[in-house]
Image (cartoon, rainbow over all chains, first blue to last red; front, side, top):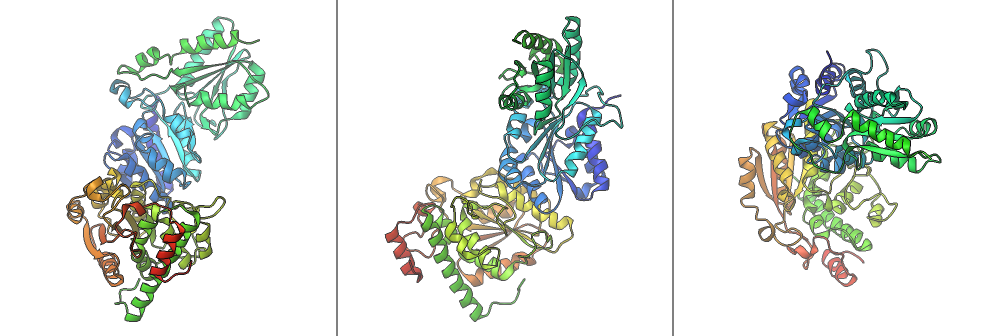
Length: 313
Length: 279
């Protein structure tokens, strides 16, 4: 039975906390939701509940990192990457300090809470910060391995998580996350859908739809958004000739932008289409209904892929 | 850490050093025609006593965790911080004459690329929380060391400062020693004109802090306040240091205009004459 990404993350924090005594965890009165409480229960002396004070949480983590600790900060993605941003930029990233950011409710996964609690700009915010790495995984094993990577890497890392349960894509024991390397999870020849998070699964469904129309779509899991895997982008341009980005994020500034920025400086180019929220705020509703209404669904990905293929010269 | 009373000779020595630091800091902001003289001069004695009498630091090994930390949360006071860092040997004092220059070491606001600086600062309110984090790390490591945070009074307009006021109190973080450079003047005017602060010591007391007041320009009184804070247990410490913005230069004293103004040559000459320095 797959678990919610936040649940997996909370368990990994506890597991790595058993091995590494320098790991400390901070939360802003949402530890029951972000699942950082799983760590806090086992290591109360290394767990700091900062109250509803995200700026203070990130500042304090910067100090803990400068003092030799490996802090993980946790709260809803939208608060972490807005209220927490001043200290993230001015202290953690400018100082290249060893703080890890767990954005628990990425995209529209805080579904019923509405637009105020949805995070659709967080990748853009975090990606623009020098020294920050940006990771968005799509299942249990990749989330586990990405969190373990964050512990080992010395410097700021942003892990974009979700409240939701995503299906398993990678098997236990398989290499599910390799930092900086995208993974082809289904091969195809006519176009490439490059996704992150839940959209990797939607891209696989889109590939099925496209297969029914005679279009062979490759699906790539772009779990590392920064630094982006330029080699994979170039390879997919050359081998499939059309690119679609798919992300649970505004089409401005996220994964699609990162791919387009990379492609613009390459010697090879391909028609590209973007799937994501189209520069709009969202609303309350069931997660599945929101994904459909805001065009984050397999059908939209398939339609954009058809369009990209049709634009080939 | 020196808990002994300062000798008359040492007091005279520190007083004269403070005078020389003022001269060097004014020269550093004068040469680049940019930087913040007012808030550097108001905390001269605070940093002088802190760095030359109290701090346990290891200039030769930046990885040594068994040290005291200083976070200049009011990062715009950087010229005076840099002068003290040079004094204790982190870099040559000649670097101050390259302050704010392209390709130079000393940035407009502190950053941890600079030897002796543990934490970037400048965006006000933000680095205070980092001082709290450093103090928590010292406690987790079981170190008998302290983290000092120097705040400006304009800075405490920032809400993030009051988040730390609550959390450090919750954590009973008695190895955190905050020092408020309470010069009563911020950029656009006095505290009262811009954002009235009310009863500052009482506010910190109500947040659960051990509050100590001192004359921030009296070497002996600053020394006493620091000793009291170092000895206190069970609560975070706030030293409210009553100071004068632009202290030591007659035309700057108490004037908001000198928060971040370039010093013209003729007024620089006046300042040097008053402080006994050369142009």
